[in-house]
Length: 171
Image 1 (tube, rainbow, N blue to C red):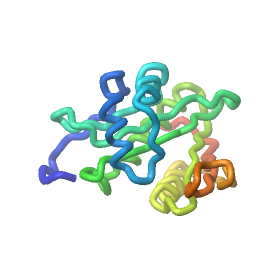
Image 2: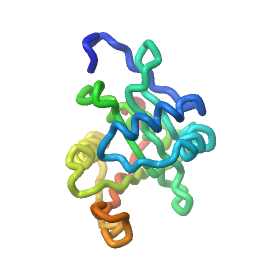
Image 3: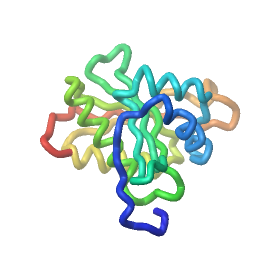
Image 4: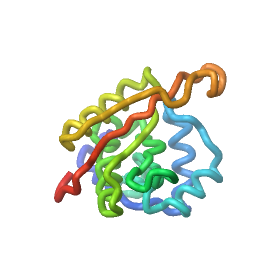
């Protein structure tokens, strides 16, 4: 995190005004697939209940998480992207964002979360494993998108499924 370790991080739903900063943050996160700014505008408007930002007390975007209710599994929230600015990594911001998304999912009656990760993204895999352990539930993974379906030089994507998740007072 930047020099001021007392920086407060506020987690809140995204707004359309956040989309340009989210787009820039994705470009700074080397492990995330880059999408158009227009897509982030849609996420920040159509799915803003499920797209969260993490901002410092001066309004700087430190991280974000985008997700949406699974279109075929009404008990599942699909977490699409989680990104934390290089300046704010290793301070639990990604985990906080996901915990808040899980709370929102539980409030909406969802009991599972899903996400995709590449095999080399050990940080994300370990974070999801820890999350499943903290939630006292199961984490399963399976091949979701084989390499031949993805752009050149892109690794295969595994589907991670965590649940069932029980609504808890404090995640």
